[in-house]
Length: 414
Image (cartoon, rainbow, N blue to C red):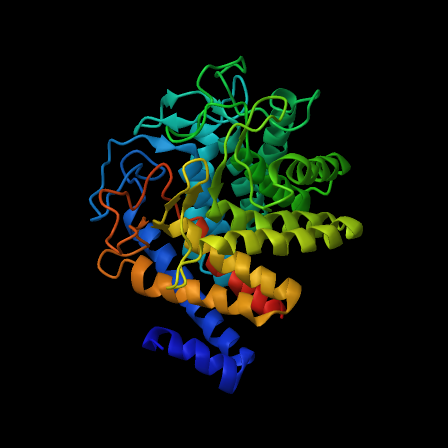
């Protein structure tokens, strides 16, 4: 047995689960502060306001880079949620910077919604309305309202919810359409990124609308929001989760016809706990019991991507029978929470072991001990993935800080 896993084995067999949880929580507190310290020290744009749009893997800032709505909203969410645990006033200050910049620059005051990207000086660069980004703005504003009491943040979250429902919700087939022009007309390119399929509905956007609406319901327990959460969960059970494999399916046309066979292990394990959290939040008890069973099945499906070292692979291209065995930072973060959640549902120790083993992998191979924060990931052969940002449109303090926050909260509740 390797030294790296001896501690897990010892704790499970000799001193028990209680000591494992104590160690896990202490390490999550420490790492949460490490992550937030990196973002506090390196990312504030003191010239233009907001946050620097890109910092490379060697911590070189590119101050003229575009600023993404997703990055800003995720910083807002991470520092707001962290403050509820750390009570560190610096964390609340960063959250306030993120909120003010979102409200002043990203919100489209003429047509509603948020711009996808801004120039470094804060002027609109890409004004396309990507519903995924609007969902994250809701998510961030809800968390900021909870810790700051800023009434305008709650108002923005409700207004953005209304905008999503007005323009994106599909009354005929249900679900949400992916993207629009600045003034909410049809757009040819619906993709979040170049690797995505150009389809009208995606698992990814539905998952993050669900988490945004769940967060909104906590601060605004409106029956319409509850109804939309129930319908979103039904979208997952009826269309997105494969009834046979219990993997998520990723891309669809407007009528929910499947357009992809790729399996995303990270999204499988992320959905395993986010869908359950949604059901728990609205206190729909028959739904909660059904989703608990489904959550465990999603986690089992995701575990097909586990490597021997405890990490979780990125994707499986089923049409080509080809595994992408890269170890991305966000996939490991979601695996920590998803498997922990499965342990809480089932009581089966194997899930807690999986969660902790992923964290052990992160400590040794994903945390960047030279430059700080987490690496983007590692290749199948263990080498560091080259030329991947430390901060960028997609590299944000969201998945990893959330993993720390969720583990801390869950252990405290136990």
